[in-house]
Length: 247
Image (tube, rainbow, N blue to C red):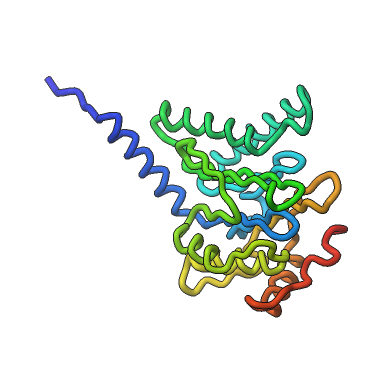
């Protein structure tokens, strides 16, 4: 008679966490950072169809790394959560904090109750009236939530990307320079990686816009901003935001 196979709960949780981390690290990174007029999202993502960055609600956006079908499922849940709460109560009652709590519950349940955890990491961000009231929440595969300030990196070779962000990030950067900082950080995933506009997915939550504050940047605009960032250099200021609001 064979002995039953036993794994301690601690070992089972550790194995699931290791599995999820490996899956997330195999992808390409995403960075989220505050800039003068709001919050910038930059993904190393050549796909025009499979978005890593999406709008959730009026002032709220979502960025993710890992398994596309799993984070797309979470994105759709988030949109439904926002629509139902905004309809039943008030649009102002839909917040990044509330959404982050809902995601934390969903991810935590999957992690503890399912054999296979979600291989995802997500950021939920809400742009405020000024930089001090912006909110950026990072959620990991087990439902842990971190309240981030300034910038966050997820996925891929995340340590190198986060280190590069730390070195170059400053508060109140204009859009072009903030994008330059984000792209430089993403390029640290590989020694000789150079990212062109067509390989990037970029979006902003722009607090100066009316109504919909989320905006995707087309490749031509990304290219223009990267050229402005290069001309400005690390020490210079860029005029890259002028005329943006009408686009």
